[in-house]
Length: 408
Image 1 (cartoon, rainbow, N blue to C red):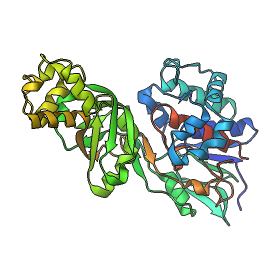
Image 2: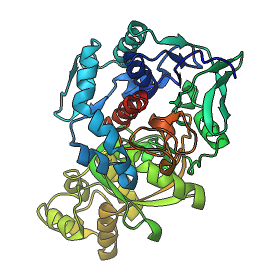
Image 3: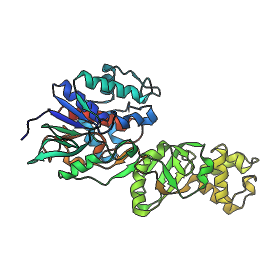
Image 4: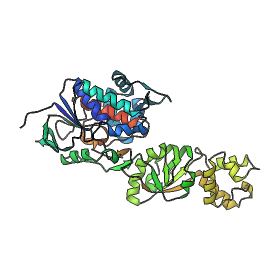
């Protein structure tokens, strides 16, 4: 066997990969970081539209709950490195942060470039060797033990390898699913992969007439029996072809699997802060002399009111009491549960994250090491764990990368 050149090779230079390399090097390991792109942290640069929402101030328990049934897997990683530890780590490498809304944590610069530059400088300070434009094509493994990596030009040897390649999201930034291929080739199970945290395209064309409007605290449900318990609440934004906004980005992870299965997914959206039919009738009765449009403008933007009136075939210039009874009923029902039909999405190219990944059952949560291959570690989005908007996924990347870098 060739002589080991390094103690550790890290594949991928996102948040998880860079902190893993730094932690290992601080502990005296000789570390190589391989990145296939010309610059480090390509996806990190795009996070939060470049503003870089790093984490949030939830307790570890509440934080894990936001990841659903897989969230408990994070417990050891978060106990080692929670949001306060991340803030301290960043301060230590020269990045000041703040919490402008009391919940989300940002670099004071609100620029992801600040984070990338600081991480790059720390990689240099702790003597991590960085190889850009270096594509790892395969992992070298013998007798269920990792031995190194194979690149396009040569083999590089180390007894430990951390796969921090991310998912398939933002494929325009180089994401290609290599990590899934590496894991699968060595016997790991990869759960079904779906694009998540992305805008959705609807069958209904009227949304284009509302594209400048944002609806606060919209409630979105999937109108399928198999999804009767699924719902999300948050800001909704209309686009020329469909919907986006935090509530859609968060909920899209639930919608894309149904879309692949059925071809279209019916949604019911309450855009009036959870008001029911009785609440709406009570509201309307408070303004007996106003037109339908004037009355409903207290609840929704004018462009949305006009479109919903058209759907219900309600004359928006009349008073509500002058509408036909069936029309009144239909309009109120549409206000409470506005139907939209998702027929497509913008794909992995613009998806911020991936739903699915390396099965958590085959990874030790206390170390991030594979239970199948000795010396192989995973961290970040390559694993089957994804969360909502709001700094959840970056915190998980940093926490899992920190734990993997300890090489316990």
